[in-house]
Every structure is written in C-alpha cells, then in structure tokens.
Length: 87
Image (tube, rainbow, N blue to C red; front, side):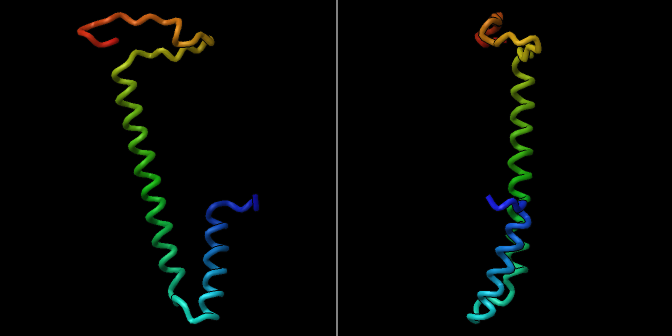
C-alpha cells in the first residue's frame, strides 16, 4: 500500500501518463479527459449511494425495527403474521 489517497493516486497516475505520452507523442489532453472520467466516477458513486439509501429506507418502512440495542439477535424476535406477510 502506497499511503496515497485515491485522488493523489489518480493525480500521480495522470502526471506519469502525461509525461510518458508527451515523450512518445501520445494523447495531448489527457488531464482533461481524466478529470472528466473522475467526475463520471464520482457521479456514479453518488448515484449508487443514493440508491442504496433509498432501498434501505424502503426496507425500513416495510419491516418493524428489530435492531435491538441490548445485544439480542433478531432470531429471538417473533413477528406476527398479517395478510400473508410478516409485519
């Protein structure tokens, strides 16, 4: 492990690639392209996190709170049946 943050690692990679491509005549605007990709990845991560939060909210609304703070497991809780679904 290098100890770099993800942003530092991407920056170091970008700088290395720019240096390499500049000496070999490769893509000249790599920094702009990598910034756009970084923004796309951040937007995707944000969308995934939002979806997970929404799914958790739906599950919380559909099930009773069985997150017992006193250390008892959910296996010890019996749920009444209503309309064919566990309430």
